[in-house]
Image (cartoon, rainbow, N blue to C red; front, side, top):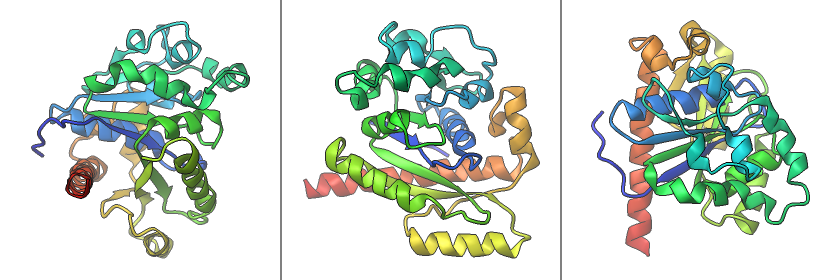
Length: 268
């Protein structure tokens, strides 16, 4: 993969209110894939479970986090940690769970992440926001700050459950808070080619969401092992099918974003 540095930062939220669908794995793995090609990537862990933080090698992190930044205690630039996989990370801790209560009476609370992010926005080519498995205030903040959304969908029974609610939420955010927001693509994860169910889920998702990525992420034991070592699948098992799939996804994402930028420039 040979990709030039981007002129415009691409801020993308990884969203699905269902847990265990591969949001964190996708955000971290894509960040690692792009970083390998000298892209400047920032991952923001916006989930109180802090899985992106531990998956990036920062278990029991003690420095300033996204919580301190959103609460106004520390500038976001002071919270940046450098992951071994080559991307930057804004870590999280369970303390972040209290931010929704703390911001309940704050002015423009939906804009807090966007405002906090503004001073460092142009220091990166890509900014990935790993969202919690809910559509609460943290996710609304992510959708208000981002320009695009990637929706990981597990190739299992009831895969489409809740996606209509998510698309309705995205539509509301676009209408009231962020008119630039769009769904970049739906990503099929944990695909087991041996099962009839996986193929049926893929067919159904592609039918309902034409913008589904061509790349499919296979089910892999290595993907589950990598976070326990604080590494992405690209450095933990670079020759695995899952690692190769995430590199393919990085290529597809880049082409998708370039085509969109070209279309907007032509039609302005």
